[in-house]
Image (cartoon, rainbow, N blue to C red; front, side, top):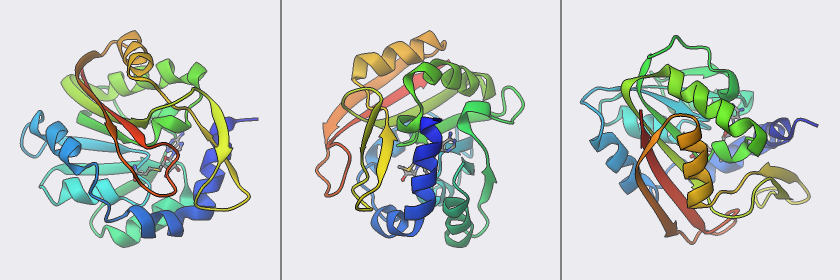
Length: 206
Ligand SMILES: C[S@@+](CC[C@H](N)C(=O)[O-])C[C@H]1O[C@@H](n2cnc3c(N)ncnc32)[C@H](O)[C@@H]1O
């Protein structure tokens, strides 16, 4: 079974519920601002696993040149409605279809958690390739145990695959793919129906 596919299928079912709950949620915004601060003005950014385009819009509103990719058709449909003028593509983050050195920054918000451990380094190497020589990325993940199949809190009776991380485990994956760790913080973030209330923010650079 492709565990990632299990997750994407669930996002197709919960796209509208997810959008209602999280589109205007600004809890992570101080860390996104921190990431945007290390980029140049009008930097080109890829929002990886953009979902309904919530953070694509947040960064576009700050005048960055942003595009989003996601593997859920339903999420992308909503993103195109919610973010007029946004550029969105159906794409698997494990096989990015961009030229090398295309982006100044990559935002990977709550999406790497759906990639099984054995595919994480390869996926991060793909991120490294599409970043420009001084490119940066912000990875936001929940903290916990690796490679779990858990109840999806937004839809009773459904299971979803989540790869939780520790700060060290994520840092090792990132350095294994060639990144340097610039900043890392784990924060208690209490939210109802969340997979985990501990969130790890990691900024990496080439
Ligand atoms: C928890 S949502 C995060 C959405 C948004 N980034 C946010 O932070 O609110 C995870 C998203 O990752 C997407 N995703 C999962 N696996 C993916 C893959 N292999 N390639 C691209 N997107 C993927 C899902 O479809 C879903 O929209």
